[in-house]
Image (cartoon, protein in one colour):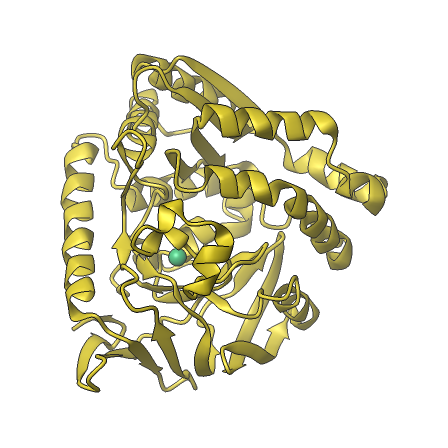
Length: 409
Ligand code: ZN
């Protein structure tokens, strides 16, 4: 591996200090693949240097997961064991800083019955959802990436230096180089995003209108008073500013669930439950996805929007200029963390109650009454065509262009 130890440490430090912003005395819960044990060690060390009280590591494995899905029954896999729930109860109690390192093989579960995969995740998510709701908006967390051999091979098939190339791309998108100061670069980057979000919030748009020559023709209503957010969030319990996604380029809000019309055409493939949906469009009526067409993964897409009653409604709209470093890489990462930062996107499923004034303290039901969608899924798909235009429409009917030709006006 050609990535230097110095660079790895710099990246680990950035994740811990700027991303999760681990505070003295906090418990950290780190999730990483068994293949990334070296990076997990570096992260653990950085967490302790930042003052963490205890770092607990949750190991994952694509290979073991595949074996489970190949050999074990759906019933068995769907069952959440008492100790798994006890773990979540402890998380609710500790409110640890959570660091997730993704490195998954996008094809890890290819060939496995998609129904089995979605049924298992549906049933397990149902049990975990109340715990997730209980910690939502009350702890710091960050998702960052580390290449794996299989993931790199998927992105750069047949390349002998696939892992190195994926490392280069990842480090470019998270603004880490041998001799820069990534912390300062992230400060400038998050300041720019905050300024754009502030402008959007001052406009108070009630509708967004999307148009593109690929067939996208779509109008969505926004929730009065709901905020546009981006890059970082403050943990309301201790004030720590953290950045949930590294990289991040988006400014997002939750639209009014059940209030949109028209068709959105995806501009990039979507990797969902380790499988690919490609060449697709979704048409909405009265805020609900009523039809979808996919060249690849039609059955999977249909299953996705029927995962529960509200999976067919939107939980997120996000603005990302086409100049984003992820888009400049010019290839698909087969990983939402990156691909959703390539261009404008929307997400089906769960919305973000924290965009509502006082949303952090609302129950899911209260947030739903204000228009925030709730679902066991949250799936982003890209609609940011090179010629995409987005207009904002104010309550008095006046308009302002927000995006033209895929970027900020
Ligand atoms: Zn997003």
